[in-house]
Image (cartoon, rainbow, N blue to C red; front, top):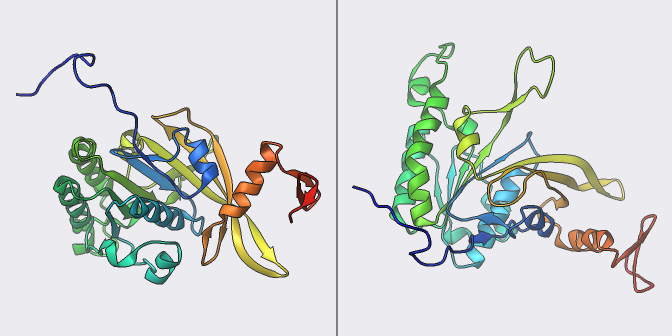
Length: 278
């Protein structure tokens, strides 16, 4: 019939368990040292902004802690070799490539309820196509189907996610609202339910290219913590994503050193204790 208790009667309220994002700057911006377990997380941004790269880094960090991760590849676009380069233990990663949105979310629900999975990534919400849409004709108008599907799934998932301490990350894409004159015309797919149920929402953007001679070897990335239920929101982190390597740890440490005034920056040169380091 349910239960009720005083918080003071039970055990002490536990600290939030977190998993590093693989980026030192982003862990600091999140305020608790990483992404919280037992919560829903949404990562969204334009194409080629580093959404999947960031989530693969989080999977690698979870595996380092001895956790089990699952990847629901609704886009059917996971590059296994790239995942391995980012430090993901590919043989231990559970992967599913569902045919419909319902199937994807049922698999997610089953994995969460099993209690044996520590982290699930759904890539992406936009690719969760309702069964009715797949079985229908190309030009059929089926308004609100995906939003209803997401709303129902999240209602079912949230309680179990907390009980099993499983982190669920939804990757999402950006769409433009038509006819918006003032304010931001950008919105995410799948309705509003995910915005409400998410404890952390990250907006990831590519803001520049990293070049070596004339060759582009990576992208400068900015992540804004748009929503945060476990720490103050609206903090930002800027880091480099190198192609084939992932987040550049060395570059981040130097940038944080400059911010903390431990490393001196003069033009394009960096020096530490009067000694030039690069």
